[in-house]
Length: 109
Length: 107
Image 1 (cartoon, rainbow over the protein chains, first blue to last red):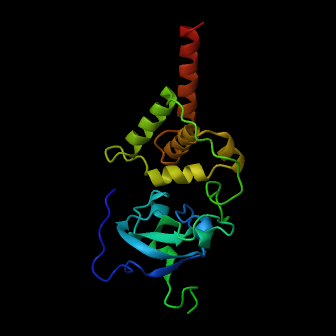
Image 2 (spheres, rainbow over the protein chains, first blue to last red; image 1 turned 90 degrees about the horizontal axis):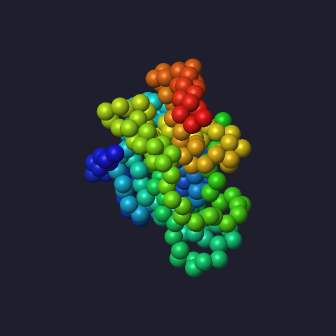
Image 3 (spheres, chains in turn brown, green; image 1 turned 60 degrees about the vertical axis):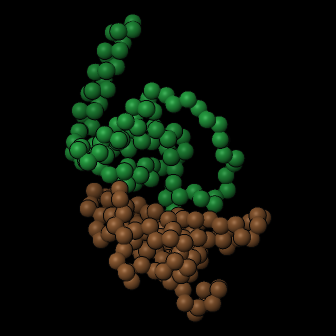
């Protein structure tokens, strides 16, 4: 399946800090529970894809959803993480699960 | 609906992961081939997303006790019935037929 690239201005710019929504999850959900509520930053814009939560129910998968590669810090996700603080975790997440943050590093506006 | 489905286990307490490779069995290759054919644009019986959804509808116990390709073949069966391509009776009759044929071939 090939992605349709976004038109200028449609996608959140790389580097944007985002918080993953907490839900409600779709019937077939590609956003894992362990990332819900976590803060990361846009590492790449992958492109538009048909919506897997609708394809899962034999629907056409519209509207198309913009997929992002989001970088998280491991220490932000796992409370007992013992590795280097710079360790990253990348996850491909759909835009309708991400809220851009405009405030400080803690996500407080 | 529940917040966390049976497949959504990232971060939950668990034992060590078995990283041992094993040889691919004929059954596994056949199940894989079935999915490739059924999801191909020419056949289009269902999308791989529907396969995942069907697997995620397993009970926690079934999700644990069935192997990876066991879950695939069970999901294929469920989706073929759901999409009204085959009926449960047709599948059961065919399985009974093959069993009978095999019993005859190897007495």
